[in-house]
Structure formats: structure tokens, C-alpha cells
Image 1: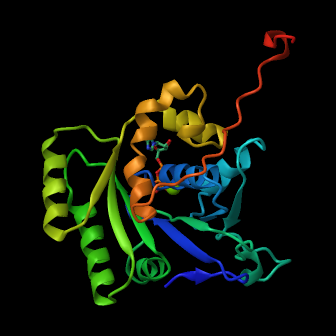
Image 2: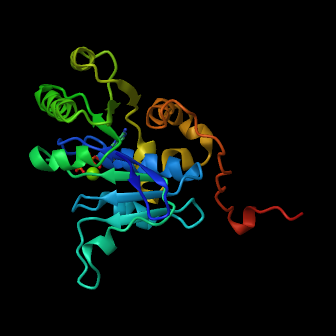
Length: 248
Ligand SMILES: Nc1ncnc2c1ncn2[C@@H]1O[C@H](COP(=O)(O)OP(=O)(O)OP(=O)(O)O)[C@@H](O)[C@H]1O
Ligand SMILES: [Mg+2]
């Protein structure tokens, strides 16, 4: 089920979910939103987390960079109705939905029903993988029971390669037939970008983030049904301080 906006556009909804706190939901939400917008896709980022990480990120976003519309789903303004506040701008192509930690049960069900793609960032824990496998089992049940047309994938975050726990998780995902589509490195690049309201692919110079940007190819392929995004806009270059500018 796709959301159709007032003007007849089909909106693709990508939801970041993991009941475990700090697994990388907001980092993924903000990066994927900035990649969509850099690809000329009109993007709205909805933050369901009272911590407001995604909305804070958006407030930092420099005007020079491709615009992203933000909706804070946790605020109820007395001046507007909820449906007005949650209104997605006409012509929106992509909705990116950031969710809080601790989502389960009926709430999980709501997010599943209202998504086209669910991405689960997982930091393979040092110890018990029970919490992660429980969320995946719940999702699987939910998606299967409802025969929903929602695609779910796991993304490893801050992954230490070749660890026993990663092997366990990979085996579990193979058993339940969930794709494990990418591993994101543990790097300050994500922290630096997050502070500035940009995605890692918007960091300058691009050579700093070459390795990390390529980790997103498989994620984009997944949410774009295997199609590659074209029509890359030229990213704005940071302005040089006046004394560095050469006169022509
Ligand atoms: N790949 C990474 N490399 C380095 N730091 C990361 C990476 N992914 C996330 N972080 C950092 O880890 C912290 C938690 O990430 P994030 O806020 O995205 O998690 P979350 O799942 O949204 O957390 P919460 O459940 O509290 O909303 C943040 O400070 C973020 O900058
Ligand atoms: Mg978060």
C-alpha cells in the first residue's frame, strides 16, 4: 500500500526500526534522507522520537544543501490540528521515518503497516543477540501474517568484521530469509556529518568519505528496487574564506 499524496504522487515510505536504543536509526534516517534529496527526490523526514535527533539534525542543515521537509510527529501544536501538522508537502517522493527505541507490540504493527521498506540497523552486540533476533522474529511474524507488501532488510552498523556474534547474526538472518544488505563502518565521519545537518556523502572533500559512501550503494539499490538513482545534482562546494579566493 503506497501513500498517494493529494496531487496523485506515489510516496515511498522508508522506516528505520530497532527497539534497541543507539543502534543507528537516526544516523541512517538522516543519511538516507540527504541522499534522496541529493538525487532530486522531494523528501520528508518524520521524527517519531521525543528525543528529536532527526529534527535537530534538520535544523542544522545548511541552506545551500538540497532541502528536506521535516515533521516532528511528537509535538502537538495548539494552533494546528494533528492532521495539518502531519501533512506531507504536495509532490513528496520519499518519506523517511525515524522511530524511537523500545517500539514493540501494537506500535510496531502501526509502523509496519505504514511502511514500504523497513531498514533495521543492528550493532552486533558483544554478548547476547537475543534482543535483535526477537525484533526480527516479531517483524517477520507481522509481515508474514499480514502478507504485507513491505520489504525488510538488516544493515550492520559499527560492525567489527569476523566476530563470532556477527557470524551468529548472519546465520540467523539466512535462516529467516532476511537480507543483510550492508555494513556501515564505525567512523567519526558519521558523527561529523550529523553535527552539521548533512549526510556523509555531503562531506567535503569527497576523498574523506569514499569508503563510507560506497557502503550506501546496496541500501539504495534495496529501497529503489534495484534501480540506480540518476540525475545526481552537483553538490554545493563549501565556500572558501575570502582570503583564499583567487581573483580572476
Ligand atoms: N557508523 C557509525 N560510526 C560512528 N558513530 C556512529 C555510527 N552510527 C551511529 N553512531 C553514533 O552513535 C550514536 C547513536 O546513533 P543513533 O542516534 O543514530 O542511534 P538511534 O538508534 O537513533 O538511537 P535512539 O534509539 O536513542 O534513537 C550517535 O551518537 C551516532 O552519532
Ligand atoms: Mg534515534
